[in-house]
Image 1 (tube, one colour):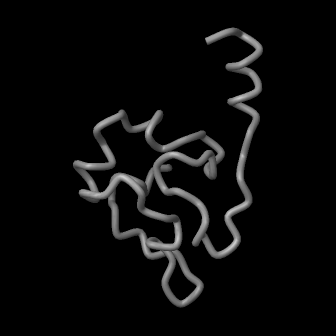
Image 2 (tube, one colour):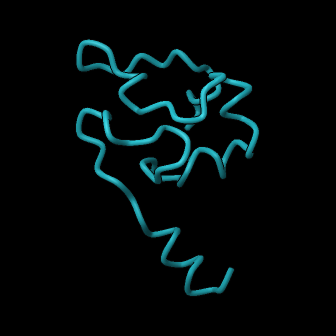
Amino acid sequence: MTELHHYAKSNMMKVIGNGSSTLLWHDPWTNEGRLVDLLGAGSHTTLTHRQHWRVSSLIHNQQWSLALPALTPI
């Protein structure tokens, strides 16, 4: 990865709104970056058994429902 590509990638972020169109693992929606990069490539299948979970899976009644303890520090 080139230095410019790394810089651009580290400064990209997605506005999540209700989270229904934001991929939990693969979209850069946290300040820290993509969860798949932070937790490791196999983490999504280990923690949720689903690769394409949406951020909306963690939101209930317009509040965060951190059903995944591994995400608490993030």
